[in-house]
Image (spheres, rainbow, N blue to C red):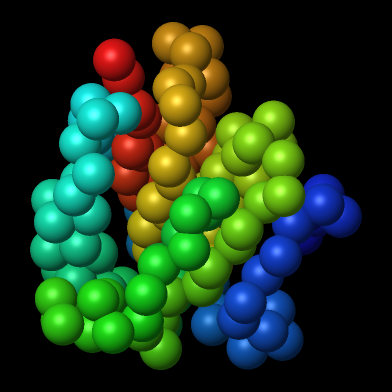
Amino acid sequence: MAATLPLDFEVTTPLAATPSVAKGVPASNSDHITELLVSKYCPDYLQLLLPMLSHQSRIAGSRWITWIANSKLDKQSLESFGVDTQKVRFVYPRDTDVIFDLVEEALVAGNSHCVVAVNENFLAEQMHLLNSAAKFGNAMGILVSHRD
């Protein structure tokens, strides 16, 4: 069953260009979610995140790195950190209330090697659900939360 996305979002990479899902790769029993907590007053948190994206884009194989956030990334900044922008799919929701659902669906679908989301914070139960979704889709998640 294919995952469906809510209608209130923008994808900047054509969905028809979605790479195939890696088949036959067993999901491990380890935690598939990494949470990066940054102060909401830290304007340059991307300096921490972009090297991670670069590494993930190099090991993604035929799957996507999916970026889900309200903030748009500059392609030149990504490339300056060595991110393979041909492997990054950008999803910009118009409403922050759907970010959790989008992240969960992207993790479950299995066509993303890594799903990166920027949100105010995820609740403990949501983190558990996202980890289960990542295991199911054999994906990993990097969640960036802004805290005071």
